[in-house]
Length: 115
Image (cartoon, rainbow, N blue to C red; front, side):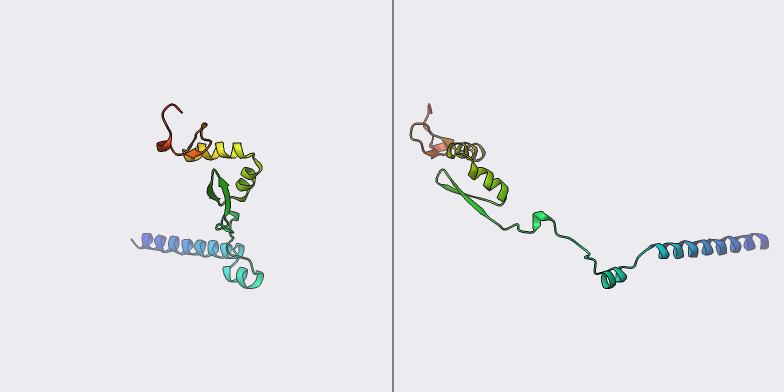
């Protein structure tokens, strides 16, 4: 019993020594957060490009309706298209059908049969 107790004490002592060595090695490799923020002035976070100007609006008028886009590149691409192509894209994505006889944009409920 005394031998076993001595063995347990020895194992626990060497385990504590190993844990202390591991901790000191880790401390030597790590850089403290206080050092980074005070000495080097590193920023702790960044802002993505997508969130820098989320409220910029680009209004485009198509078929007499104003469409507000939040993507400037998409707005520029749509504005570079001819009016007819712009209307086709608008009608395709909004579910509005273009009446060929009247030349006006009407919704699905306003379309006459046979058109």
